[in-house]
Image (cartoon, rainbow, N blue to C red; front, top):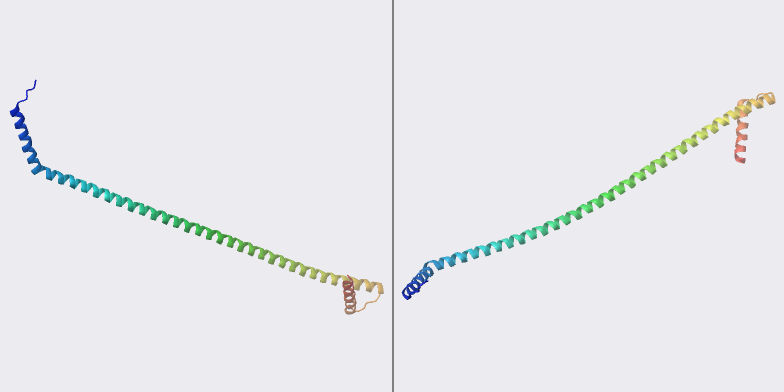
Amino acid sequence: MLKLEPGMIIWTWITFGVVLVLLKRFAWQPLLAMVEERENKIAESLRRADEARDQAEALLEEQQKRLAQAQDEIEAMLKESRAMAERTREEILAKAREDANRMLERAKADIERERQAALLSLKKEVADLVVTATGRLIGMNLDDEKHRRLIDEYIQEIGKAN
């Protein structure tokens, strides 16, 4: 088995103490400085990551606000476009109605003119027929001017009676 010798134990402890003092004097401070520096770098990186995350969140919120504003503007433009289309539609319909009414009035006026012309033509034909028939019945010819005047008076009397 293993034998423990007191001299070896003492020298081991002395060597351990010397190495410990040397490490403490020469290596411990640089190691602690490196660890502290590493901690500081990690803390700084975490701080920068938090700042970057906060900035990203702020940018995201700003973009969402802009997007909502753009959507509101789009909705307003769509609403305005719909209203403008409805106004245009109403204007077109009103113009079409107006044109149709104008055409109807024009047609009525044309019909009335044609009716008046037909009545006038009919009066002349009736007058000529009456003059001819009267001339045959009476056997003598009155001049055309007197016949027409008599017929016109008679037609006016009939028109007033109706």
